[in-house]
Image 1: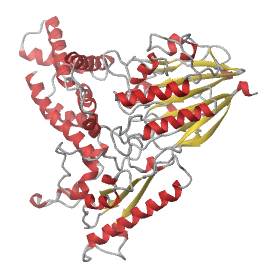
Image 2 (image 1 turned 45 degrees about the vertical axis):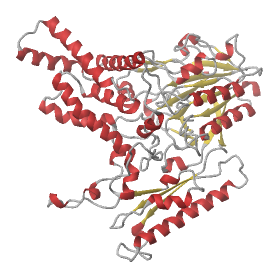
Image 3 (image 1 turned 60 degrees about the vertical axis):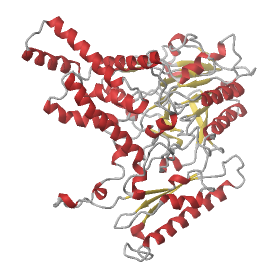
Image 4 (image 1 turned 180 degrees about the vertical axis):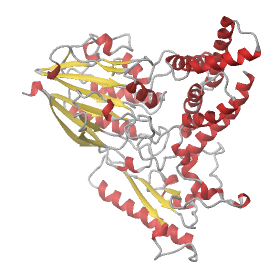
Length: 597
């Protein structure tokens, strides 16, 4: 019977507002969200489930919020009846709002398609009140924001219990949490998923999560086997590669679907797979997931060229070899453009200009050509003319360095070194060495890492100073309470006090409090956040597990962003290096600050 079947539209990582100001791609995310919502209305779904990162930025632009609200009102409000009931305690399910009930049960609203969403790492809650853009939509009655855990000591996930006819659905959600912290909490049994008290075996258990699924480090991901084995289906957000067909975890015996993003935010292979959303049908304990291809997504083609493989055409010693390499690359780009044109025939909703990326491995003595001049040939045909070519070296081994005066450092730099490093890792590595020199006496590397991350990622200028001030005040109070007076006793007590807080909930709370103070100071001063154009330069846009290449916005004139000193090879590493460089400069300045303290 149809009335027993839940129909749910699932999508993740819409990244609304990505490249909002780009002349060619500025409307891509809005067109795709419109398509997703229209699809939900056409299929008369019971509700829409979003797996995080609805917005690309923590503080979306006015245009972005206006477009989102307009579309949600257009497609999700109306007279169509809702055919399912909510049986759980909604004050627990929607604990971040002053209206703790599902929007379609609000007597002042007319909702035809409810939207349930967790937050991602791009639109995560910030500030003293822990608000995110989803909370604005929640307060206006357009979205039901759930899965927000406010405790750093224990996570308790209560499901939204729904019933349609004889089908019972338990919807669990967990918004984005730093992977290392969540990993540690799972290991320490600090994550609890509650189950319905009655008829536990009759419920279909659906869980949506927004974390790293691919292993980026020892604890920088969430293994599937950490999740409870009573689950039936996991909707995994954050990973951008579309792997929407459910795969069975043979250990836990649940299925996992990874819808992927609906826009390419990095020019890497994982983003090149065709984008889909899913129409999930649940009846009793059985499910069916239908793949729905998105038609408004801009085409993206990527290809690798290893110049050393073309020995029959040229070698590094061939006369005019650079011109021959350029001609080869031109032919490859033309091939991809022709393929894009063939695929676009009969698809009027697909944007006209595709994204094209050619990754050129020029190891073995080849030289990079002028990419700016090359790009001019395709200005009117591709959506990303300034970063079509990405030069990299992969096959060269480190040379034996005997004479340090004549070292060619450009040959020793790995193309992905800067991209693979995260701010927290850099700080941790630095202070592990610094510990030997006792350069940090009040602060822990975790606290400093978080403060630097807030400065680099979200431009909280006061985060570092505020953390130092806060720790200094707290340490002074501790010493006064202990009555310590001699210099030797003070040093020993400070060291003991700092070590006692490492990797504890107290340390987490202190970091959070200091960062909240910094944000409060900025709001009191009325400071504006970093210019979005500049902010995008430091944003981490490589969201999938393949981080070989990262998308860089075109340089803005007048901002002094050079191309680097290594020709075309320098272009592909600008963002990663600028982020790490800022961190290095910050660490140097922190040394001076900590010495003052």
